[in-house]
Each structure stands twice: as C-alpha cells, then as structure tokens.
Amino acid sequence: MKALSLLRKLRILYVEQNPLAEQKVCDWLQSLFAETLVATSTEEAIAMATAKPAQVLMTALELPDRRGLELAVALRKRDQRLPVLFTSTSTAPDDLLAAIRLQAVDYLIKPIDWPQFKAALGRLADHVVDEGNIVVRLGCGWLYWTHEAMLEREGQVQTLTPRERRLIDVLATRPGRWVNTERLLCAVYENPDHASEAGLKNLVMRLRRKIGQEVIVSGYGTGYRLLPPGDD
Image 1 (tube, rainbow, N blue to C red):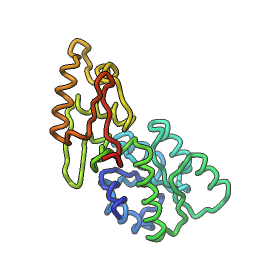
Image 2 (cartoon, rainbow, N blue to C red):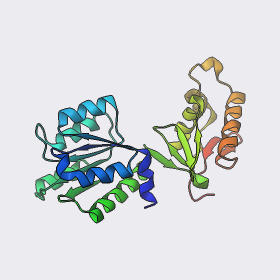
Image 3 (tube, helix red, strand yellow):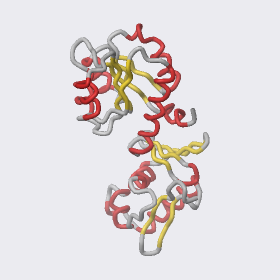
C-alpha cells in the first residue's frame, strides 16, 4: 500500500455512464485519491477537465455520447502524458489493441473487484514515478510533486518559492545529471537583469537549508545536479 500512498496527492477524473452501478469503485477512488471528479459523459468530462485539470483519467469505454477512447485522445491533446485507465465489459481484441496504442496504464474488465483494482493502481503509481511528470523521486527520500511545487519526505513538506520551483523543475528533468549555470540562470530568472551567479548560489543555499546540503550537488565549473535516489 506504500506505493498507493503516492496517489493521495492526485486528482482523478472518473467517467462512467452509470456511476451508481459502480459505487464501490467510486468509494475506492475517493479513499485513495486527493479528489475524485465524477462525470457521466465525454462532454461533461471535458468540461470538468477544463475547469479543474486532473492528473489521472479513468474512463469507461462505453459512454452515452462518445467512446472513452475518443475522450482519452481529446484529453491527451492537452496533456500528452496523462495516465489513462480504461474500464469495460468488452474483451474484444480491437478494444484492447486501441488501449495499447494509447499506452493506457491498464484495462480493467467489469465487474471490477478489489484485487484487480489494487493491482491496476499499483501499476499506475509505478507509472507516475517512472514518467516523472507528476512526481519525481530524489535522493535522501525526497519526492518532488511537480503540480504542487512541493517537496515531501515522510510527511515533512517543503513548499517552494517561484524561483525555487523553476530551479527544481530544471534539475528534476535530469536527476543525477549536471545542468550548467548558464541554463539555470535563464530558467530561474524571468528578468535577465536580475540573473547572477551569486544570486543563484544564494538560492541554492536557501533550498539546501530546507532539504539538506546533500540533495543539491554543486560542481566547480560544471553547475548543479540533484542527488538521484539510490545515491544517498
């Protein structure tokens, strides 16, 4: 269940023509995710996703207006790496192949039981970490939640200033790899007149006070890098 705890920071959009018939699934989602949005059609789902973007989509294939596959394609145009789980009574090869082509995290056959559901969410949690667009694992046990601009370790939370967030955003795209100072200055400072190596060093120093000296590594003439998991 430790992997599933990662999902408690995420918002999921659940699309089901008859959510009352799948009440247990709704209950599971509400207990495991930070927020569960429930829609009964693709039109309603798109409106909800526009007003309040979700980090995960779970949709039935069979919907009253359009198919869940079309909904996934539409939302992927906004977020190319949106994790998708499909639910269906169909085991037709064409449907399974379409889900594979969309690189869905999983395809759950109704009626959905807890072991099937738990296994799917375990794969979802692994996917979220592997992709790194929602949460990034760092050294010393830290997690970087990209959509919340927040670092977390064992319940300890550190919020980031806008400049700290921009710094971590760049470094977190390549954990363990060096990023040169020039690139960091361009990313961190919106106004080039405010950019300086001294200012960047002070920014790094303040971050180190929040999360530890060893998490952000500096190299003379090289730049900075984040300590990747396993190197601590």
